[in-house]
Length: 244
View 1 (cartoon, rainbow, N blue to C red):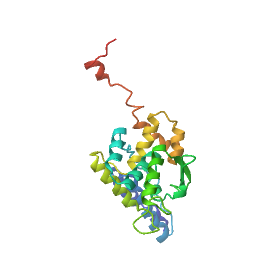
View 2 (cartoon, rainbow, N blue to C red):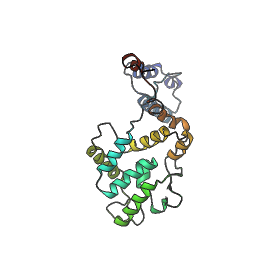
View 3 (spheres, helix red, strand yellow):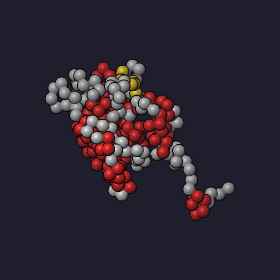
View 4 (tube, helix red, strand yellow):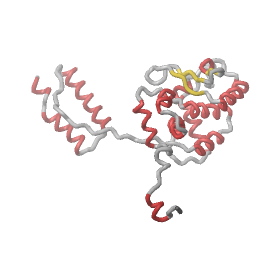
């Protein structure tokens, strides 16, 4: 059975998927996991393939809205509940799952904080509660009188669904005329990028977003106008030289 564990045709198959079919790193990992399961659970021996250089994961930069686009998006929603939901998503940098699971007691109006429970990785954290959002929340509470969940669903006792929140964003983005490929998560990316452009220390942004490593947060340095927009292309000096 040992010969089965290290069959060269399996290695050749994997290399073919990488070099010829150009499969992604994620697809190769899935294939290897399936093969290991078969060999270890069925053949009861480890799958020996030797060193295989896997394709690198493609790193895609996040899409970010400008301040003007965020303003247009928020103003495009005529529904108070929807507008406040989008305001919280952007102003606090929350994931959509975190937004719909907020409860009334998570809003600390005195300390101007939002308590996020069991975020990604089951970690609690605090993030910003802006004055503008707090005013909006007060108007929203008077109008809707939520009992437990900050954003309640159609049925009593249920929280707003993730899909409903996503749809709120999609409708607002369409009304605002935003042509970029965006989702409600884009507001979280925009929050982080705009803070960075304001000069906020990246460690504070990391804490607000709930990232385990600052390396995750550093991706926003690649889309920040503060980092890139302040530079001038050499063509400016060639075609429109500045007066000295």
